[in-house]
Length: 419
View 1 (cartoon, helix red, strand yellow):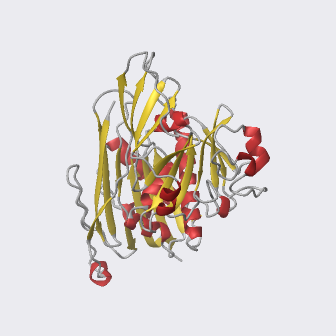
View 2: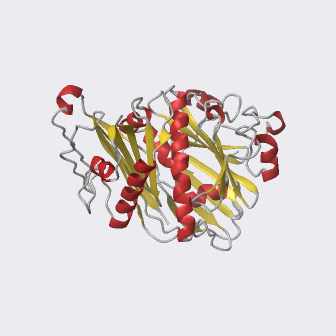
View 3: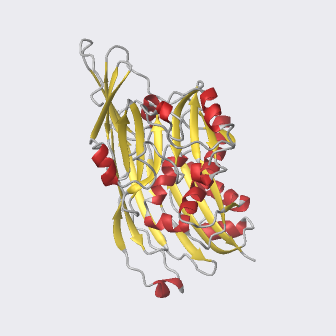
């Protein structure tokens, strides 16, 4: 199966920003079709959204407000975002051609982000891939929450200490995913939050094609050298998320198991294999499973947003259930009625109409939406690299946040309550 991806957007000041990403599938395989759009709208309560337009070929979105536009004195600019969505192709090779790897806030305990015992392997807060649950308990203590993931494993979330925020994913009792955007996170003594891309390249030059073996399958991944660098470190895949609005410094670090990397479709990927056709489909989810995952991702987006605000010395956002209800309804509306826009194709309501209908009284409000990303981490990271979305995330005037997730549709509603 093979996919191609493209993404482009138009920024019009701080009121509106659009990013469009789409991918098309040429044959079966994972059977996923993802389209990612990101559009934030921010307006004080007296502003009126009078014109938003979008189409699937050329994405041009405009918004006008009778009072806001003359005072903002903003300059529109083109912006492009290159985030590769799942893409897979497979080719059969002869049995005799055996492929080889061609690449060489925490609870009561407060570990350092690297551990001399595990120095031969990359680690986040002393946690390495394939570590046991008991080893993680010994190092980090009990998690603050345990939540399901879209890829069939369980997240342990440590969120009480923003400096050491970390999510640890377990499948069958072993670590398969670790992510942190906490300011104290480091993969090695020299690769950590805030490390420049140039420093990373001096230590290990990222490759355009990352190759590795998984069982009898030879994998080739097309890297994203602009925003999401994939490195192989001691046979462990590591994703370094770069901040394009802060000199391409590392803003998130993820250690991820090879199988999870393939199943999640984080990058355009192709593979060759010997013998039986490999099955890289993620585990199937029931409707009940998906509902629990939706709620889990909502909380994770709140956590990730607040950790990022903490790094910029912006006060944390409190949870707003009214805003969350509004966000959930809009994500569900977009997914089930096959549209992507701030203005509902079914009701004609804009974000501010929806908030008011749900009894949310606000002085200021904003909305970010996204679709097509495999999990909350990827959606959150993509928002940060879109200037308009980022402004919503870091807006000091916002006091509360409600998040609504419906499968791979994501909505953030930011509000400053009316006093």
